[in-house]
Length: 320
Image (cartoon, rainbow, N blue to C red; front, side, top):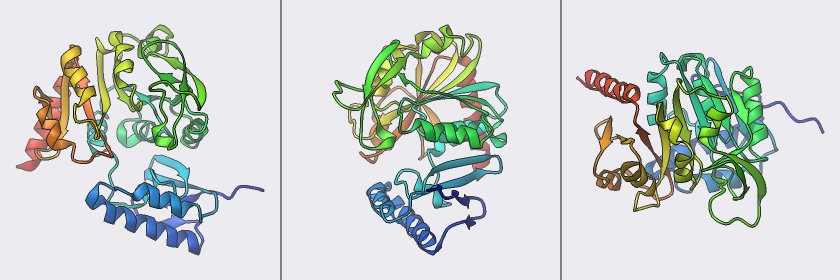
């Protein structure tokens, strides 16, 4: 059977093209569900959307994120269908940073890239057409990542492996495509190659003198990944790292603050500023939902610290 062409959705205009009547009705339900569940951090949305997906034909949807960025995923996917809600902003503190960095000649290291959302955006013209290396270990996810590279002109590199403390191999397992992990002792799943961040330097994929934003969405292996990137983090690099909402000890942030030379930064929605953290109690206030992740930032780079200060100054001027 020949696969149907993907549905097209434009987030700017709201136009939905190529969907039949049932698929249009599903789009309305997915959008309404996102708007309603946004009031409680989208709790339950993924499960309901994935249930609805079982009643839909297997088909892709290509979402136009901006005039130069197309992102495709399976129609009805519980994690990504929130993009049908035009008021939804995915990890908006990262978008704020990436947009502000459009004039910087940096490379995004998109570790745990999933289907490549941030690599698609960062490599687009409104974000400065920056270089990106999308790293994803899953045999289930990688073809979708490669497809998103292809439909965007192969303008970012894709690498099929996991990120860890050292080069080797590990077992990758999980139920949700957005939460596959090599953490802990795995018995099932698939065996995947593992590299350390510093191996990217040794293998010549990146250079010592470059500027890097390192997105670490590696599902429980954040600290090991940091340990494998000590040389990289000595230069002009900044970690964009997931802090788990269900971790009251703030383990990832505590490691950055207490075990590395990096400064710890978090975006505070109350002040709309990127705040330097010296007391982890601020995360008790910011991490309001146990089922979601929160981004924290770590850097020892004077360049990136100055960019954060400038970004805060711009926000202060806009608020006046």
